[in-house]
Length: 459
Ligand code: ARG
Image 1: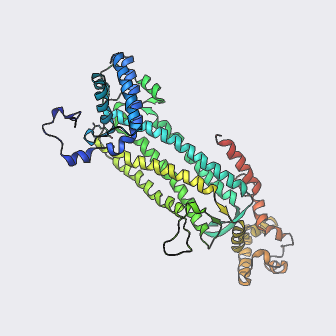
Image 2: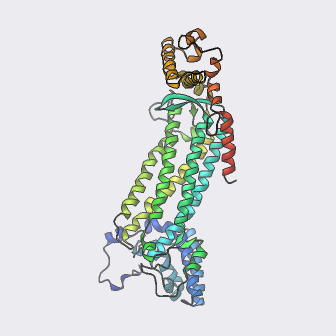
Image 3: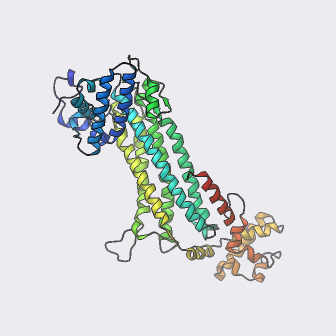
């Protein structure tokens, strides 16, 4: 095999285990596309500033084009001895073009090269993830629209609290995902800055044109300090933090789906293609997908902590520690993309059982607050009304019935101001209807929220 690109001052070859230990090509080969894009832009700048001759640029462009074809077709021979994606590509380019290939690395270091590659990779990943979030939001809106008037028990402490529209419940997740998308848009601004030109750490003595490279690669700006440019990975940490928040949100929905699918609730069914069976219990159908989403949230949190710990206490500027940024980052992107894709499909196929939701809402005295509000509107101070209704609930509990099933005479024992019109207030529909303000659960408001959300999303 060829000798190492940097072995000129070495008196013995690197030990085999050390070669394996220090190599990153086994995972950073995934950066090839971006490495080649970066090299195209760097070479064009070198030619435009007369640092390399035009003929070298032509040879480099031809060579890089061929290398990208070889990589895409699976013909490229990745060599562990060449350490990483950058040196593998450079070695091949030199084999194809001779001196021209050897000139490509003028005014560049792998330190600014790898920082550029990761930023290009992450920028593309963020754009894809933002689109996947939109996709999931659309599914949530469609489902919420179908169920604007479907009534379920709203919970606090997982105890029945007040009736809510199932559509309203789903829209809560729409809002979470909206902020998640905004966070990624914001993170993208800090990702989209060009490190190239920083070279190893101090900049370079060649008359480079960083603005040209930034423009060509679609960066919004250049990194303004060479030491910072090559060494910090805060943009990747920020992305992983946003990813952890997305997974945290989806783990909450997953937990709910799992509960709702259990026969004790029976609110929903998840389509069979997202479930698995048991090898011993023939009756089982398990909600594996939401369970795994819940589980993978731990893994994404782990990647965030890994990157924070990796960066912590590193002296300026580049240190090899940073090579460890890639696997957590790649796995975060892969896991997030798969999770968002699968979630949109799974929710689109969700079967909802409004009867079961309704029955559950009828069981937990969900309209007790409405009765208290009724008394308040007739002049009772709220704290007294709270006490009165608590006693009525105890009475109903003993009779094993709902508040709305008590007779007017029964209710009047607790407060003489109760009249026949109380029974409208004690219905689930009446309870929902009455919360008719922006952000409230009345079906009318849910429909308005859906319209507003649709106008926020791109087509
Ligand atoms: N594979 C390295 C990384 O991922 C590339 C930069 C290495 N630079 C160096 N001087 N060893 O960070």
